[in-house]
Image 1 (cartoon, one colour):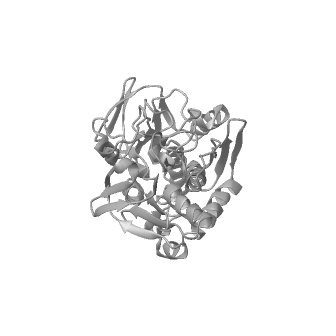
Image 2 (image 1 turned 30 degrees about the vertical axis):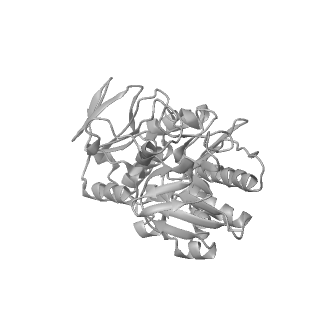
Image 3 (image 1 turned 45 degrees about the horizontal axis):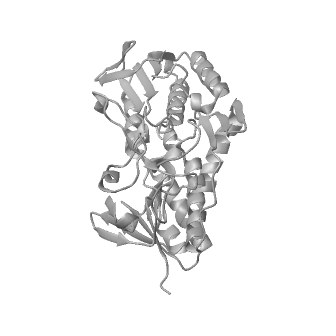
Length: 377
């Protein structure tokens, strides 16, 4: 019998976890990763590039060794669509046909606000973080405005945690350089209680930390536009010499060239088993998917890994002639880091834990980075 073939779109957290899990469960299955480059970018540590704790090459992990160890094929291409009910992936380098598909291609930032080109979106990658680093070195003073938005049709499709880390990290960096007094730091958000998804205890802790650090806030007003040197909301406008803004997320452009079911916010609609509704042996994990669950369910690496493991477990059930039975528990887990201390936050449907900032958590985050990346080096 011909070996089964799983195609996995993406080279991020969910994609690599899915590939690793599939190989662990089946030594013979053919696995093809489809992505731009044989390289993994560790996005959680982008926050440390401006201060120099991390250099760009520290976060670029070549995947050659990982691919060889797990006997994975790599197809370097840009996905442009799907056909044949997900059996065929269309790319700019040709088509790939498989027996099963895992969609783990991440999300796309919604860049519709007028003048958004005047803001840096930190989680776009290493180049964005380097640009922030270089701008901070050039600046002798001024106002730095940091904020994030969401997708009003997809409450979970936002990534606010890193923006708190950039905010507190830049504050700490400027204090360490003894030039904080020359800068105004401003945090803006359309929600009156930013970070609500982290839990009420976390919101209070974050707002308190901003006040303690003399960070001005503009909260509860819808964003209108950015200009060179200005941020405008429905409630106020203020000058800004450097703007960092994380928009909400939606689905990849190539989703439009497919029959994939879409959520109101533009993501791939999945069930509690991470299976794409109405498709045979097609699953989604990570930022690409819209999953049943609470509004606070995060778009973060930890959740992507959990969803990828669930997807592979259910796919293997289907290969064996069964039905998907595995589900996942929504879990938010992060350390909001400032470059020297960290606030630990964990949330599940059953509990919420917030630990005040301490140095141990900063070093715990750095240790986890080393531990996590070791499997890919």
